[in-house]
Image (cartoon, rainbow, N blue to C red):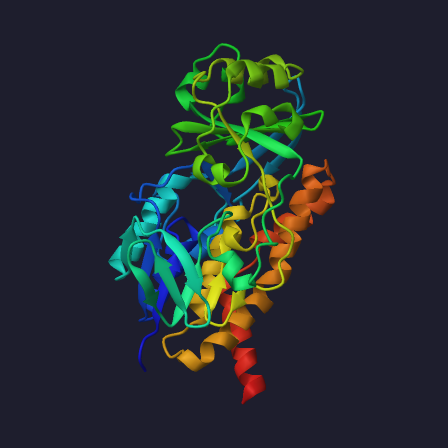
Length: 410
């Protein structure tokens, strides 16, 4: 059986994850990345057991790469009193197949790219996709003309250059507003531990703490081999809109739009002394403001032999702690469905099956994130949602769906 020739647009998180599985299935895979460097920028994200399970299928140990086990999560009031404590990873057997961790994006990206290249994936950097011919399965790269393939995977993020070609429309774009912005910065853990006001918050077990006051949140968790804290401060967008970018410029500076210390302190002035101190001891030049975006469900994720995955088709706000996880699940679902013996004639049906599997799950994640952003604080609801997220096995689910489809068609 001849292998498929596959183009992947985008070398973020979902693209390399898909590339690894597809290359190991024996397909010829080339990633086209617009940046001239493969050094990933960005901050940190939560890997719930479902996505860590996906990484384990790829042979990637997130904790060995610098991620930190999310053993205890504490929710605090404005003055630092513990309102709720959640313990995770207590079932040792379950943790072996998928652990809840806090991961530093550049480190996960480095692990994925290393595994992809070792699996035979080819990488083209500085490759700017200017157009896509969905009918003939080809991408136009600046300065080169069209490059043809059997299948195109678009993992090029929220500002995807491929999405409009799949949908044959420019109408389907991320929402200009979700109602929230976020400040992000990194902070040395030793700096917090040695501070006379902050030190009491840090111990060997309290791996994440969060304040929620008047619709504003500060979320703090360790990454980078437990050496740094990632801090995310969400708030109503009107409080910092003057410092954000939108439209085309947002794509270029999504992680690098600076915010002033004075603005940050003024927005969180009603928080208690520990939360304010966290902001005061940070590098005043290290604050970045991020306009949170998501997107309503789009009519289709694929057209002919071109398919979208990750933020290219379903960006979600971070309140459901699962944006990156959904992209990783997409990647493993596709690589599981596109087996070594997949023929060109079978691609369209496999892509339809991918959409059938993924759309309902992603819709629930998006809708839950929106509800949490509005202030939903129902412990039972959130507990059920966590179980919905964590118990999912993307590879097993895709294999079952593929077997059922084969049985129906036999």
